[in-house]
Length: 151
Image (cartoon, rainbow, N blue to C red; front, side, top):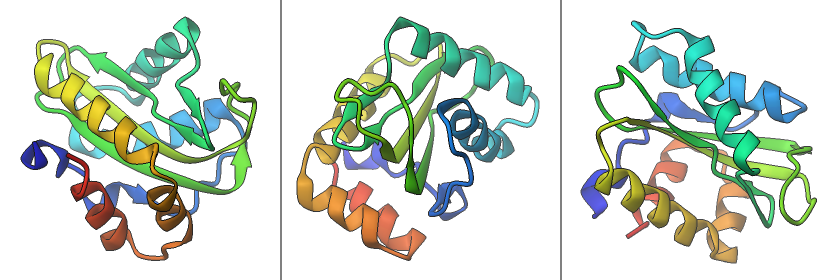
């Protein structure tokens, strides 16, 4: 499992999201992941994520959101991490502001690895000590180390 979690790269870690709201945060992180798929439009990535939010907020509680979606024309799973120091209003299930966002974009045809990645990240972020570490670190490399512990 650990092999598939390691698609998080330092350039895809934003320790200080500028966005103040959900739309802005989704756009900001989609913009970061867009570097890996320049043949697609940022607007396309954003639309997929927004459509997913309409089904139900990906704000899972405890200050965490895991926006995700399947994108036509993507050739591999992309992961991005964003942290908001002030917190973002996200319509989370517990109505708490979101400080930690993990974005997962997946090719449409990839099912197993996508579900495993989503499950692994969900489990990791349910651990209070991992959330605390992600909220306090100042190093993108440390963020990646924490995610590599997801099994």
